[in-house]
Structures are given as structure tokens and as C-alpha cells.
Image (tube, rainbow, N blue to C red; front, side, top):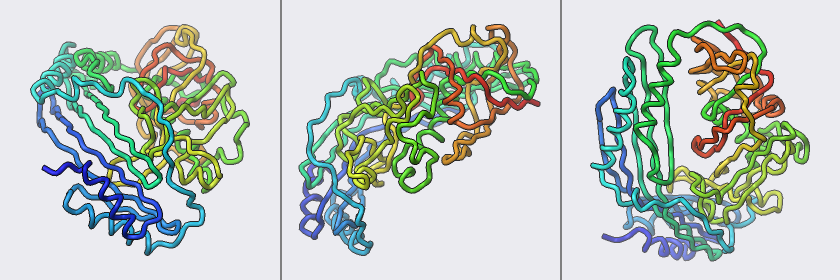
Length: 440
């Protein structure tokens, strides 16, 4: 069978012969296994092969793009990409595709155990997930998912870039519900580059949280200390801060952080770093997805806004270098700006013990409705608990929290020691001195 990587070099040639000024070829191939859980049984298990190529070309500053998963249509796709560029108007703000530079060494993104895994072993791990959720009496799983895979990407361009890299990933999630009234639900998930996950413990944690959340009480509407656990704060950050530091949004006036570079926007003990070379990070690779070498970018340093995040196009508008933040959802799309591994840093302490009166929130629902420009949000808090005199107390039946993410950043006065990776955000629980809590 013809390998699509062998034809990637031909795509570069086809597009150049057709008259493209610059050409980028993004090629990926790999394998994935996914398993769905319905209640406490495996509903579907499937193995899939992935193979495809995306071709981006520039003609007089105009960008054209085409993709295919058929090796016999690569010439056609290359020609189509050039034609699509020619029918678009020239963009005077286009600079150029990245050139060939030394790539950093990265660690922990490939695990041979995942690359070689069979579907039978994946079913066994999924059963561990289910059994963990069923290990707590009166709690049972309602749904869940297991997935793992390996992929190899190849990035070529007419400026001399030629980068090939293989990685792996595994993820698992499960939802649990109480059998007895009053009904209470909870969920848990994890993702990793390595097969180092305790699937039984993952299921057990979901059921334990559902059990602890039973027999909740009402809470008062007030301003108080709020502790946001990793899944809650990560969800809020991804829907507000991440979009606000996106250089494309800043340049188009879609960010409240425009013209605030070098000013204080957060607690002076808070730093946020985007790290494309973090060992084992879900967003780690030697380069971003248009070939710019990966690096560490301090976004906020000691409360001061230090950098936006850029791809080549946004960086070219300001005549600066890309920060290596071009990402893709697949070979069928052009790059856009996104975080790699966003790390939250602040001196840690016993934030629960320090809280006399407050609430702790496990997850939030509705973070996607936050205003990405102003940072305002109003979300439902799930699996929340009262904190009384330094102890986690009664569960809360229904509660919302509202505020502004930039006020939250200024009011952070502590973080816990429970650092975890929530997708591409690495964070512990954070303590916010004052936030609006809306009870029943």
C-alpha cells in the first residue's frame, strides 16, 4: 500500500510547479482505539486508522488550502490549494512561513506500550474503570469512554522545514450516579501520554464524589472565599484567559488585554506560563503545527502581562517571532492560535485549612458562555461543598458562581498542592479571596 508520507514530498513539488510562492505540507498517520461505556457494560469498541494530508499554499500573500486522505488525489489537492489562493485577494500582512531552525529535544510524549496495545487490553482497562465505579455500594456508572492511540506527523515547507515526530495518548472518563434518592451525580477523567493511569481508581473517585455529594443543603447568596478545583478553574481559563491572550484576538480588538502589555493584571504572586517543551505534556512536541520550534512563553509573570501567544501570521503583523502556538484540530484544517501546556504557578499552602467560611467547587457547567472579551462569567457549580473552620463540610444542592476572570486572577491568594493536568492546563486548586456565590 502506498504510504501517504512518501507522497508528501510530491505534494510540495506539485504546488510549487503550479506557481505557489510558498508551500506547507502537513501529513499525519496513526491508529486509535475507542471504547464507549453504557451503564456498566461496554457498548462499542472500535479500532481506526488515520491517514491524511493538508496542503497550505501562498500566492502573492493569499492563502489557499486543500486536504485529502486519498494518496491518488494528492496532485489534485495540491493544484486545488493553489487555485483557491489565486481566487482570494492578496493579504499585505502576510509575512512568510517559518524557516528551518534547530528544534528542542522533548521527553515523555511517546510510550511504546500504547503504540503496541491491542483492543483486548483496552477492553480490560475499560473494565477496570467500570469496576472501580461499581466498587462503592449504591453507586453505579451511567456512561464513560476509553481512548488511546499513536500518531506520526510530518511537516514540510518550501523554506526548508522537514520535521517528523511520533506521539501517543490515552484518556478515560466515567460518569456515576447514586442508586438511592436523593440522586447525585459526579464524573472523573484523566489523560496521559503514557500508560500510567490507575483506571480502577479513576472510576472509584467518580463514585466516591457522587456519594459525598448526596444529601446536600442550600447555601446563602453572598460574597465569600471560593476554592476552584483543577477541573473548574481550567474550564474557566480556557474560555476566557486563553482567548484573551490570543494575539489574533488582540489585534482584532476582541480582547480586553489589548494595550495592557507590561501592566499588572493579576495577583503579584501569580505566574502563567505556556510551555511547549514540558516533559509529558499533552501539548508538547519539538515544534508547533506549522514548524516553529517549541518554547516556554511567560504569559503572566508575577502578575504582569508579559506576552500574548502567536502563530506565524499574527507574529508577522507585528514583525516579531512566533511563540510556537500554532495548533490544528486535524490535517483537514489550517493552523490557528492555541495554548500548548498552560501552567499555573503561585506559592502553595493549606488553602482549605486557611478558609474559615467558603465553598469548594469541583466542576462548572456553562464556562463556554463566558464573555471572551470582558471575561465575565456566570456558571453552575457542580459537586460543591461548604467549608467551615478549615474543614470541608456539607455538600451543596444547587449553586452558581459569577464574576470576572481578571478579577479572579487579582483575587487569587493561594493555591493547593494538588497539581494535575486537565487537558492542556496544569493547575492545582486555587483560592479566590472574594467571589459571588448564588444559592437557592
